[in-house]
Each structure stands twice: as C-alpha cells, then as structure tokens.
Image 1 (spheres, rainbow, N blue to C red):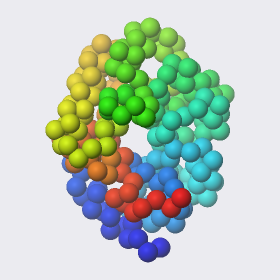
Image 2: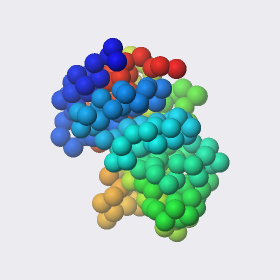
Image 3: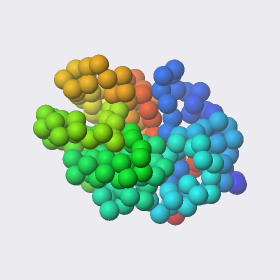
Length: 224
C-alpha cells in the first residue's frame, strides 16, 4: 500500500469539530485500505455498489457500519438489507417502502436519510424540497415500522465557488429545521445532516453538517 491512509485519516478526523462524524468513502478502494483505516479506529464506511459492498462485507470485520451512499435501485435492496447500517440516499417513497419490506424480512430496523436535490447539476439524484415536503406530508412513511428516518443528505454542486457551496449547504440546513419542527419535533433520532465531501467538507461543517463523507482525501485516487 503506497498511500498513507492512516496519516490522511488522522488529518481529516483532527480537522472535524466535536459532534461531526466521518463516513470514510471506500468505494473503488481495496480492502487493505479499509483495514488500515479500521486499525486507526474508523468504523463507518460508505459504498455505492451492491456487489462491491457484498465482497467487502464478507471479507472485513463485522463491527463495521456500512453506509450506502449511491443511487440505490429497489431490486438491490434485498441484498444489502441483512447488514446495512444506513441508507443515506433514499430519494423516493417507493425506495423507502422497499427498504422497509426487506428490513422486515430480516427482522431489522434500517436507518435512512432522505436525499435532497439542491445542487444545480441535473445529474444529481434526490428529492426536490417540494417533493420531500410532499412525501412527508402524505404520511405513509409513518406506517413503515422497519425504517427509521434519521435526517437528510445532500451533495453540493461540484464547484470552487465557496459562496455557492455555502448557499446550498445553508438551504439544506434551513430545510432540516423546517422538517424537524413539522414532523420530528420530539424524535431524537432525526438529527443527521449528511453533507460535505473531500473538496467542501470544511465549509459543510460550518453549515451545521453532522456527518461528512470523505473519500479521496483519505484514500487517494480511486482504483477502478
């Protein structure tokens, strides 16, 4: 391993304020890189492809908390439901219901985040703010006993414009407050604001992120 994962992981963790958790994005990185981060005490890792995740789950320690961070097709949910810790990328009621169905079959409750589409890029997935409002107002989610909505996730635009990034993160943080007050005022589990990646997580934590998803800064260029 020619990349000093441990040193870069420590640098990222040391830069995070108290109360902000690190999801180490390990997709397209080999298992020995994950093992190096694990040896430094990192336990939350993010993956976005079911088959790659399955291989790593089998090969690596079972106390790892795996977060699914990519676009998740409903027909893939059954494969990850037995062990996934959190699905960060729920972008439809259909997907939420499928996660609930498969979690019930496994006798589990799976934590999820609702993914928002705030960035200007059309390629991003996620719910618009109005679509998220509609999903929650509809109320069907309240009857899903095997999923637990723990907060919101979003990806900012991939730009260098700090003002634009701050505006997008702030919009997400303000929307979190709106949703928390309207639907989860007494639910302590609804507390996560997952935004911030390698190029912008320093700004994200200033905009009330509780969970940053950092990959390249820790693991180096991806190995495809």
